[in-house]
Image 1: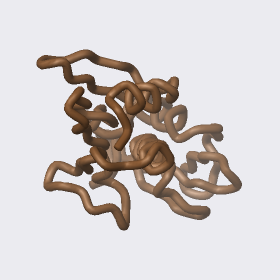
Image 2: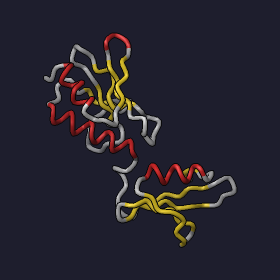
Image 3: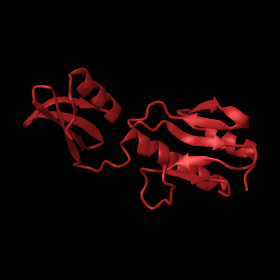
Length: 152
């Protein structure tokens, strides 16, 4: 079992995570750029050895009802890999495959399509290309600025 300090060192090695000290000596690690309402990647890391990593969006990972996995007995490599996958799942990009698309609609029922191709994010109005972006985050920011939301 990794020590508390070893687990913290692994978590702190991810520059995209922000450390948050919480009560009873526990430490959380937030991913502020999450595209979901989930921000905690690391939750309640404690000197007693317990700690949890969010895996609610990951296939093939046994998580609790809130989407967390207890990493008490994880090896360094297992912890690194789970944290990496967790961060990817919260960017929204991990689940997208070549050709995937999603429809966005504004208050006037106009629709734009966000499509992932050739490692780029494209926004289409019908067959016309509106914009192209290098990340989903940029594409979604553009769509939101233009008054669009995901079609439900």
